Image 1 (cartoon, rainbow, N blue to C red):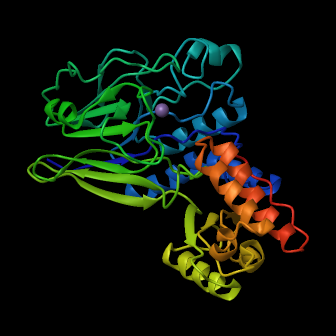
Image 2: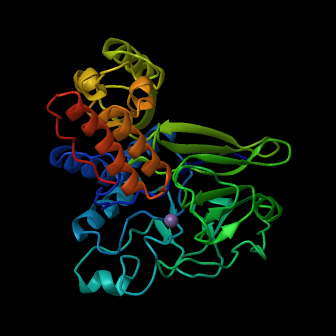
Length: 400
Ligand SMILES: [Mn+2]
């Protein structure tokens, strides 16, 4: 039996507005990044040329909202046509849900004069499990389902699991929340949608599970350590919850051997969220430490970086001034000054700076609200400048 080669991706979120993502991108860079988010389908087509897969698996969230412009939908369809004759399987998620009146609805496409889904694409449109054949590979089946609305699904999709078809290679596509996932986009509290455990996934007995919904790559291993499935993660870093390199997955299944998972670079730049401890450093020391940190993080000129400076620098050190000229090293550097006043002045209640520092620190200790905290941090940095008799530089715009 020939090995089975799969190409997997999900969570493109085409049409994302990229606002409020904490990076403070300027208009021009935001527009460029939006185009890059929208070009994930083209990058996938290039990855398919490289990997020559037997099938492409896309477990959901291909677009960000039902209001995605029809022009972007056309580009999506063109990419899928470019993949033909390779079969493409889509299991719609909670963002690109398959309800009536959406882009997965043929009548809706007809009414808008939009092209229908190409013949090589199979979309799972039912909320119940369905199994599809893979054209050209009668030894393979794909079992999938769809979200029909954006609402949180509290039901457990793998309890009970769908019946495993008897094919030598039985593949599963599932959009939902692996309960042990701990990436930066992990949902808080009870917001997990279509939740499932590793144990539920393993006992369902499939040869591979293509997972979507979470945005950091994560492989789910069997008891013997071999891969049972994976989230590829989103292919384009859109903000501080999608940091680091982004991947498409090439998965090779061969009878009698563990699945082989290889990553292909999916993004042309990356988002980095770095923290620098000012710890007694003067301006030059801060600059050297920041350069070392960028190097260690593998920063390249195209990257989008947030650098948070914490701790107590040497007296009268201004982090924003010391680090301002690092901005030329990457495409975007958002500097966040969270430094505290120097320890000696702070201990002296007899000085204005000492009382100011203590007052703000006690207010900071009293609140968890991130917006209030950020305002207090800025007040601390700007107030110290003013107390030192310097004109405070207005802080850069931030979107929290
Ligand atoms: Mn999702």
